[in-house]
Image 1 (cartoon, rainbow over the protein chains, first blue to last red):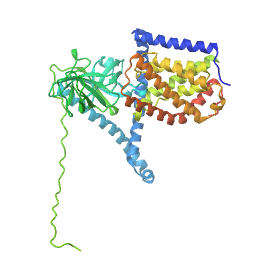
Image 2: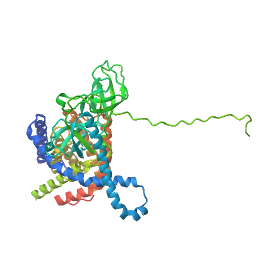
Image 3: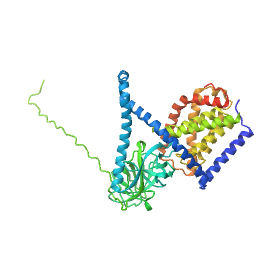
Image 4: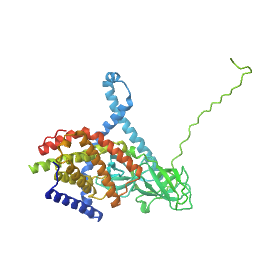
Length: 307
Length: 173
């Protein structure tokens, strides 16, 4: 027999819906209580995330390692004891090497521009069930992190600090659909606005209809007033397609971010901007093409045809 | 009895919420991954009365709103989860034929997850939440549905046992 519902359950549902609508209204009106609840919950959750990151990382690395081993079961059985120690070392080393390489690149980037940075480890990646792109880092207000500070990765811009907690911070990734950044094209200095699209691609909208953008143009952050949320000069991405629709008010282009958002393990928060604008000093070097040897074969026809 | 049920349910919900926030989010799963907490809540709602389903949806939505990765205003998930959980438990309540049918329940959960995400997109659009390009949304919806289809059969018996333990009922799944 199907449940037809009774007055009490209907009343309960109505009360719950009204409560939810009340939450939405309070939040949209900026009532501090709601923000306080979220803030408190995140402070509690971040310690679990930190523990989770600590426990899960070796397993993640282990499974990654296993998929690359490609060895037979018998060989693994023979070498299990010997390999277990070495594998553990290798896993730890791999993880550390990868983080070290990212950190080195970040320090190079920050050093060239003169940014004062605080490096941070990514302890959690936001669930995509909300169609948002966020990460949580292991530094917060205790380390001097504030809202609206630029976050850079080894390749360029990673995002912006959205919320700060005592020992962690939430970073809105540049790939988030709500992310907007003012950029300029290296060289021509033309300006535009870049919008995230939920993945590594972004859309650039130029502000001046007289300007031109070309495939391969490098985009750098234009910087904000008082260097927040964006410090100037950070590499953002590379123009990969240009939309030349004849009726468009201004030219738009497809851009690929330099940062690989799915592989972020170490990032840095820019806490101090350089005195002078680094201009185009951070434009990444173009990869040098490897010369391909050309083999030329000369064929000389024989005087008499072969049978 | 009621105190026992409420306190145990609260503990279980918080446990799965923490699993989602601190373990599942560590893995960079392709195509959006899955939400074990959402799957758990929907299974819980399927096995409950509409009244309990709505209350479970409220509690789950409240926790999901507390999540740092929630992009909408506080209360958006609460509203959606109350509606979806009430609807899903109302459709199933008293339908003994469905309760014993493993495949139908899995189908219900997948549809429930998809409906939840679609509700989030629609209410998000009304509330001004940016959700990205259409192709990315479609990819995420397909990805979440496939992941749910994989994860639900693996985890459903655990969720059903927990439900049975809390409410002293016996489910044949």
